[in-house]
Image (cartoon, one colour):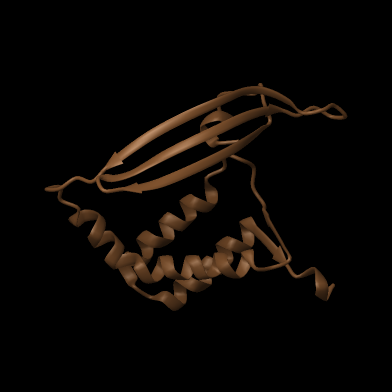
Length: 146
């Protein structure tokens, strides 16, 4: 379930979310069909509600994006290392997140490390810290070697 729902609702357990993004000359659109499902032990799943959403995003001009660009330029190697680590974990036979829904310790830790990286720009040290952080929250293994 989405975090916004998990923290405020307990009347359903699953969401089947179908999203479509369409590029347009002005920007893009985002359509979504969501089916919220009640799942109880030894019972057939029951649909609670089906929702449809439509968002339209338009390009803007004249906005100063320099703060975002500066952040990206100063942290891009760090985030490349994060993507590489996720890629490694997600290509294993089994990957499990070791924290409950709504727990922000992993993402908060990543942003803290990104801020530290901005100050030091020492990727080797931060790759080691990334490994330690992922080891706490992401369990991945190849079952074929057991």
